[in-house]
Amino acid sequence: MTALINQVRETLADLEHAIWAHWMNYMFSQGTFNPDGSWVMPPCKVKCWQRQMATPYLELPEAERESDLHQADKILALLTNSSALILSSRQNRAYQRHHDYYLRRFLDGQYLDPDFLQLRLALVREALGLVEPYTSSSDPNPKTV
Image (cartoon, rainbow, N blue to C red; front, side, top):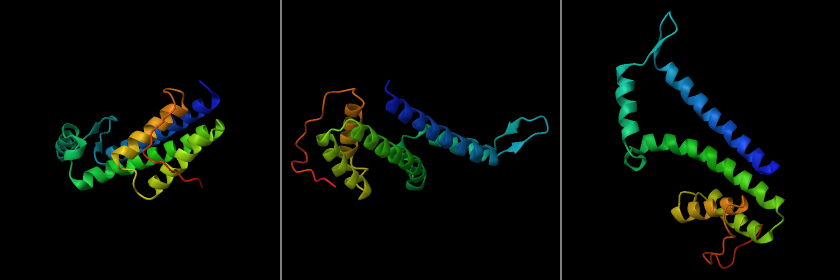
């Protein structure tokens, strides 16, 4: 693995740990600690979280999906910044043009578009050397910044 990819991997792991730590802090705040150090989860939380675990994301109520989207936004921001570093480090203008175009779509709030997400994933995988270069004509005139 290159040093840059290692750096991105470490940054992703750091973000994942922060998301997990935030969740654990919230979860523990919802229960009761016993004198022996054990912890008891309230029955209402057990019921709620079991329902959420068994429900596919798209079937969750909007307020519950919003919480997941908030966490996804953190990862998307990190991936966008990381892919920019990878792309610029390769000094490849074609990749940079695609990155700039799709970054503008991301910033315009179009990042939930399934085509956009597939293209971003393809570009990141391409930048990491996991696939051949992307050659779609979905944007015949990508703009540069």
